[in-house]
Image (cartoon, rainbow, N blue to C red):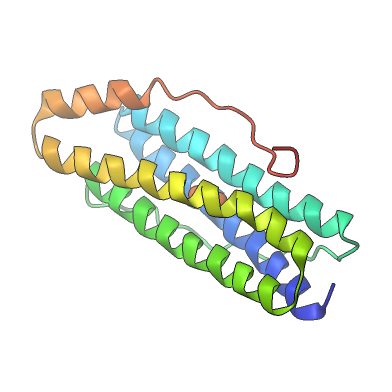
Length: 170
Ligand SMILES: [Fe+2]
Ligand SMILES: [Fe+2]
């Protein structure tokens, strides 16, 4: 594996761990406001991002690369309201999609077929990640300041169940 590919996979491990950190921060924001469903959804989201990081981590080791973990940046912990949390989550997923596309372009340029194969899982996952976040951006818009509508969304978010993901095994 060439040095640029190795560096960018290490950068992606950091991006995914930061995503986990960001969603954990969002979960705490929700929990502090007794939005237990929101907190459940974002806690599970944080766990999934950790799984995404581990997918790149184990790939890098199996491909005889070297893992070099980096410092994780401090995530935002102040949000104007619960709707903004989903807007920010959606924006963040769009950023991650750009990163995965960038990695795919790099793998193509380097004719790294194994990396392309791994990244196909992440490309599909990003479609889902964006769809899930944008669905709740829209639902929150519809709810507006209606307390009972927010209560219903919170109840829906409470039903999410964590299913461990390992893209290397999927
Ligand atoms: Fe991710
Ligand atoms: Fe994500």
